[in-house]
Length: 473
Image (cartoon, rainbow, N blue to C red; front, top):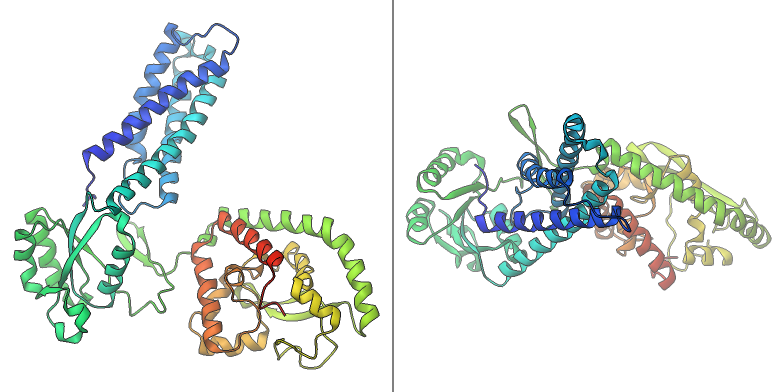
């Protein structure tokens, strides 16, 4: 069943798009014919003007650009606008080619079209994003809300209620739960239970309920089907909140649904870096960034640090250690040596005030300069600039047995810095909880990767380096 949209919402979007398109057409002609007689009112350009307006509506229908709802994400918004303009550009240039022998369309200014669609895309993106922000602000003030009830009061239902309360801009007003066994819950939850599951139908009809969210377990198949039939017969939307608590732990996972033919298949963990294009983007960034660091920093930093290390302690300049990498493959991580040579380097973490750390080593660790040789690992593809920090083999073996989702970190390349590090989970992990928090942050990064997130982490890392980090020792 298609999601409900108000005609006002669609009308406002389309009017805004059309106004922007026509302003952009005028802007494109002014730009292209600057200092020359403007030909926008000539027959050829008037026909093109009319055609560009017509193909907007066709493109909007094909691209599904108005299939946006209360919980639409920014990425979804951008994707829909990309599709809209892709179809518009294809139709526009098809018009030029098809009608070239009828009204000299080949003489139309390509520059005018380019400026038209470039400016229209930017302005439409700003307009759409701004409109959604305004609509959500309006709903957050209590207007245009939809009254909803939740059938079931279990963990999934409670999580969904909390989400609605935290995202008031979605415009859903929670009325209450319907649950057969209220005695299972504490007083606070029982206060929100309006009745048994069998009473939801009558309540929904008499209290103007807009949508019913069903959070019953799968073994209640008959009741779920009856509820859907009731909604269909009475024009009340029934939506299913799947009970995935048996499969998800620590609420780290996000669900994605793909269709294999006509069969929906749920993916328990989205991985943006499974996409080939995303991996290419990340690798290009890694190569470019590492080349810059190697060329403009390590080229003079290595000789200086090497000399100081050699003059202050015996041993090699670089410290190499086996670490767990991508898909748990072992690789040698490279760092400046910051400790006196000892036998337990592969088993014992550095601690605050560690006597094994040399004087220059303390400075290198505090400023994170000891990590810079790892850009060589990045250049050769063993690491990434951003990603979960690689652990010693001994720690990987230990923590993988006691911490849920620990091995998920190895679905991507390890990084020099990462989301966990810029959020305070750097350095020594004194207890299990500390490591669980780090794993939680790393898995969140894997599920939410984007190029802009990587750039954000780079800047956060630089800020932390300048400000100084408590856990850098």
